[in-house]
Image 1 (cartoon, rainbow, N blue to C red):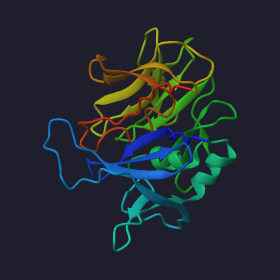
Image 2: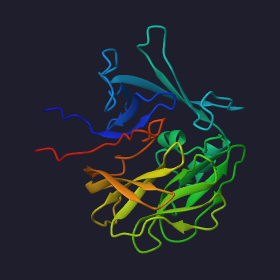
Image 3: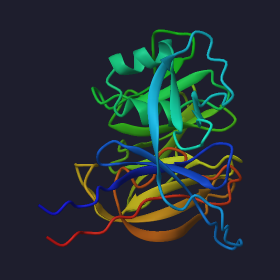
Length: 269
């Protein structure tokens, strides 16, 4: 039987480099690779062949990690051939699991506040968004109406950005950390999902799906767009065949100059 390649499921930047990217595949294997950035000279020494990365979840009593707020760190052996990604487990993570958090490993990487004081997630049990303080065991419910998903915290820790269908179609929203003052950010005829705030806090990257659907997991025609928060201007960067894994993790490079995303194509049978 012919073995088909497995799809890439999300890609994200390591927080301390503008070149190293991580991604998963359909077999839940983690790999890393380095990018040649557009407009910059190619690097002859870049890691061009994907390198497997091991993963583990470790208990964390004090969580004094180098990557504050991200709760993950990468280390190599002396030969740099066996990188290992360590995800820190603390009390708030167990609260997320009890309330039905999906994809715990990626969510633990992506959903922390920048200062490490809180974790935000969407529950599959009730389609609502919750926030857990790092030293707490109980979650705070931030939304109560319609379906809500894709929460991320702003770099300054003031807002939670998310997608919601409370206006009749999936659009981008933001609210204060206690869920108050919800504000709709997009008003169009697309399904706007997966908001990610740039590291400088000025822009929000997101996916706009052409066709509405009740199944968020299906692949469909999509557009990668960026919303400027100061004036509400939206710029379209690319058209793609996309899904929930197309924009995930840390799609923004740490210098806020580049976006990493996954575009799919239909395979012939």
